[in-house]
Picture 1 (tube, rainbow, N blue to C red):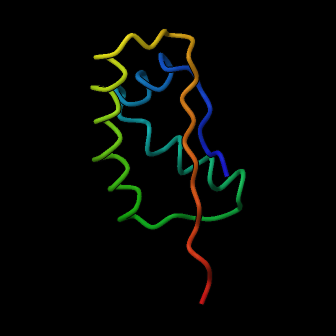
Picture 2: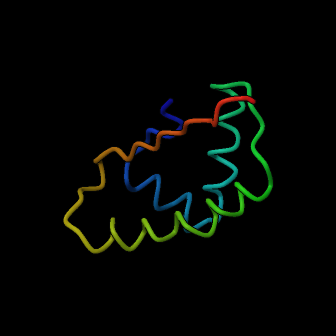
Length: 76
């Protein structure tokens, strides 16, 4: 399921403002009615800023959309 579909400039703003974890957490709750663990949230907050380097260092235009997909593991 796509949990993030925003322009690259919005994505960068969320990351610069340290809000990307909150945005993704809220989207998963809204779209999937699921709550993620604190460790998963922390993992995203630590790894997704690396996307800033990719977006910033390439010729990606500001209005290009960034999509993030999330798949929950199956229940046991």
